[in-house]
Length: 312
Image 1 (cartoon, helix red, strand yellow):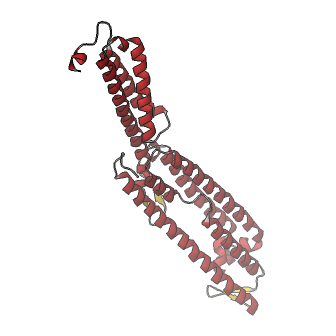
Image 2 (image 1 turned 90 degrees about the vertical axis):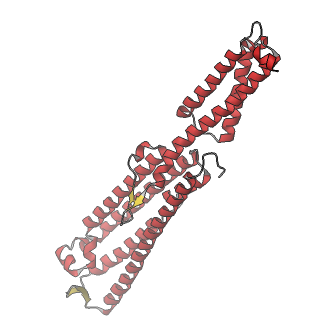
Image 3 (image 1 turned 60 degrees about the vertical axis):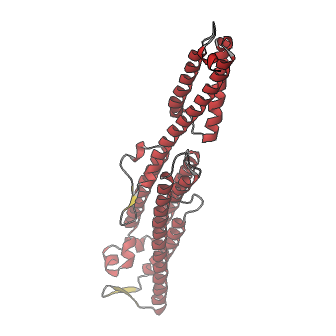
């Protein structure tokens, strides 16, 4: 066999053909991931071997067919090996890009109020990171919009007879609370839409399953929105309170609501208990969201700590 490798034959140039084929495979492995959709490592191996075989056949037709049997077989083995190596390079390229994307979720922090703090350069780390950054920004804008709508209605004044005396707008326009209800529904649909878009991007990412699950956990469920249910219930309770106070059967009793009617006093007490329960539920939802995000972050960190070639 060694004699065969020392002699390429009188007319064939198998070494040049093999080197040229290997160069094409490496070039494809380096440039392909920039334009192609990420593929699983087994699929890349099969693709690399198949491409190597095609390149060998081209080289065989052009020149290797004139070489000795040793070079014919050897060049085939070398090119298939180069194809496997190119697949490993491409897989590493895909994984490096995807892990940079996933690193955004491994590095997020939470502010004391539960707001998500994104790492620097998050939008440049990948498509999932960019979508999530957009979602975080949109969620913050939604909170500001809801706060502004509630302030315009005068919702805070319904909790204090002093404030209500200063700003009686709410009890003179209780029907306007429906605008807040519509805004809550609109914001919920937008949140669910953003979550669905993120879920699709996560599903197509070339990442270990545990990393995808962790990122999906951070993003949240796309099927329902517990925040909306709580908001709508609170809006219902606030509308009841507004109607009650609009009767003007109350007085400012040293900063507390006093009522001339026992029935109104009982209704106010029941409404206050209902709104307190809903406020506690809102707090529990916020706490659950924080715990979910932190747990997802740890899951992503654990997944990224493993080798790109480790089985998930």
